[in-house]
Image (cartoon, rainbow, N blue to C red; front, side, top):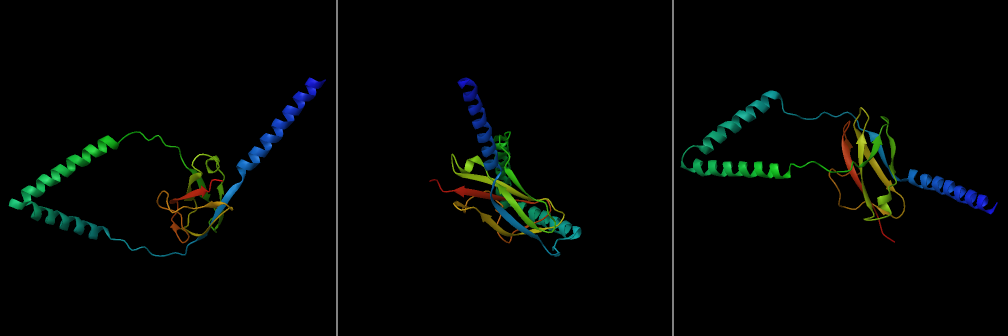
Amino acid sequence: MKQILARARVCCTLVVGGALAQGAAAQSVGGIAYAPLGAQSVPTMSEWALILLAVALAALTYRATRGQAGRTLKIWAAGLLACATFAAAVWNQPAIAVPLDTILMTQPAGGTADIPSHPDLFTGDFFHDYSAQNQTPKPQRITGISLNAGLSIPPSGPAPKCTVGLVLQPNDICYVRVYKEPT
């Protein structure tokens, strides 16, 4: 009888502990508030302006490489091209990266997207990187970033950094690094 009660107590403890752990993992550590941006025109160059710019650049390149001074410029250009090719070949390795946790902005009228909790905040380096993505058809402006007590956003982190006032076009991404002071 004692063995049955002991096993029942262990099973009950595991079930309650698992439920509490899932509840803690599902909590958020903060949120990103966002709102739609009013329509604005974006200045761009027309196709003809880009073609004229390319022709002008080609003419300047031809002018710079003729004559005696052009030989030195051609040698430097060839050397830089060789160095760039070598560097690209050396750095072209398969990426072994873990995707970031994503904070999704899904409400076209604006709202608050929760920043999920992550075990990295409580162990190891005490920071975790998140990516925030605008999944609405409208541009969204970040109007605020709030975090729970004891957490902060350090000045370092991947770019572009999510900041108040940043405008994310549809499907654009920005990054948030959340840091917890070790206790």
